[in-house]
Amino acid sequence: MSNWPAFLISEYDENSLLEYSPAMAHLRASTEPIIITAELMSKARDDGKQNIVAYLFAKYGIRTSALFSVHLPNGEIGGVTFAGEGPEPDQTKMVELHYLSNLLFSKIHALRDESDVKDFGLKPREIDCLQWTSQGKTSDEIATILGLSQHTVNHYLTNAARKLDTSNRTHAVSKALRLKIIS
Image (cartoon, rainbow, N blue to C red; front, side, top):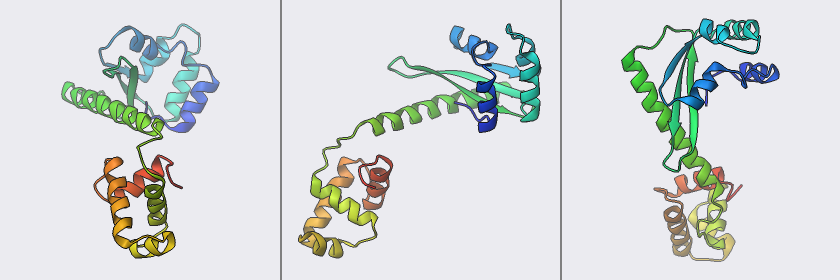
């Protein structure tokens, strides 16, 4: 994960710069955070593409990067990079960024796992009620549309919110939309 601009990532990929990146080599070999300057990044390459790297970093205003190795309990490993024009972060800032890196990585991993799970045990009527709620219908209107009582609609929406581990129907609709349970 990185805060690099999308165009920089595209140009980096187009020039096949990732394979011989010293930052990636460090990430594969160590769990220690590292600060990488644009000068170091362009000089420490073994592929002769130092000038391209220096040009791209200058073009996108990246002077310093902080790279963190992150791990999940299941053993999955990743890297998080914070890059910008500012000076090298001090030790306190590095600790804060390392904490944020692990938090971001675990949250994104949790979202990915959530989106992989299609069955939350929602019944078809619960999904119907969520779908109509997403269309702005009230419980009374949904009851009329589905031929149910308003009490039953509220019951279905409460159950759906519970199964989706959300605090209310609005949150349930939002999560159901994100997970593509409803559209």
